[in-house]
Amino acid sequence: MNTPYRKTQQHVATLQRVGFRITAQRMALLQVLAEAEDHPDVAELHLRARVADPKISIATVYRTISALEQAGMSTRHSFDGASARFERVDKLHHDHVVDRDSGEIVEFQSDRIEQLQTEIASRLGYDVIHLRLELYCRKRP
Amino acid sequence: MNTPYRKTQQHVATLQRVGFRITAQRMALLQVLAEAEDHPDVAELHLRARVADPKISIATVYRTISALEQAGMSTRHSFDGASARFERVDKLHHDHVVDRDSGEIVEFQSDRIEQLQTEIASRLGYDVIHLRLELYCRKRP
DNA sequence: TTAAATGCAAATCTTTTGCATGTGC
DNA sequence: GCACATGCAAAAGATTTGCATTTAA
Image (cartoon, rainbow over all chains, first blue to last red; front, side):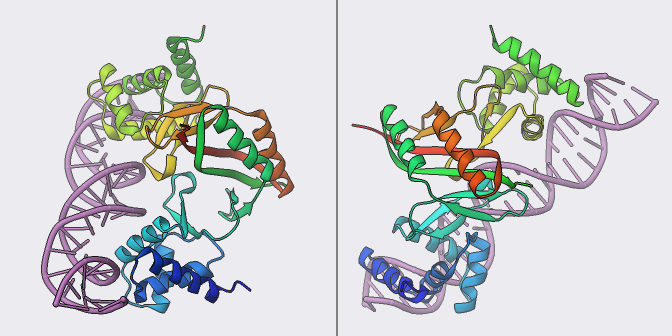
């Protein structure tokens, strides 16, 4: 099973390989990320990380989350221009439905859409590096 | 023909209908928007609007662009978390390819993708209010 | 006339950064 | 030990807002 603990272990290994030092703060954030089932923003990450390391500063959260992003372990979203939200990257690629009423975020995945996107970029002479697809929705009555 | 001038006239009519007063500042911004072929940010809108009305303030640009958005005449984008960029809304629906090297933005449209998106939302029990599809790309060698 | 719009500057919010101090390796 | 990481507080950047003044209708 891929438990949060196992995930964290994998991330630690990756971080070391890339040359990052393993600090208490980074461990705290790795754990938070591994356990998160949602898309927390920096303030929320900070709050959750404090549980494991009560003196972690907000600046460190910013710096660490950027480092994890660079290391390919976290993705950043900014739904409709709001402040950045993050999620672990070791899931299958997926996109997001944002419920405009509740704020709830639902993940979905479609091979067909993915394929079309690549085709379109290709037709325009581009290679896709990454993409954002967000559906801002309302629950159907 | 749908000249910038004609577009501006239509926008003025719409604004009045919705109950907004027609001020020199709003005229200036409407003109800027109607003439823009790109996706200017607030600083750029301010710069361009100053040509028609040299004393328009940045606060008014912010307030007006939000008003135009509410009135359904302008859309806001925040490509990869950067500051907001705007475009007129009276074009056909389209999505964006963002060239990661040059910053250039290319518009494209695909009925197939659009249809798939609606289908997916529908399957999850949602109606799409608006959506955002952005492909961050690199020119193919 | 008068409610709405503007300009200005101050406030807010998010994110980044300089620097002195602490710490993994 | 030393380069890298952290905390703090200040800075930066984007956007919003309070308030006195101006202006469209």
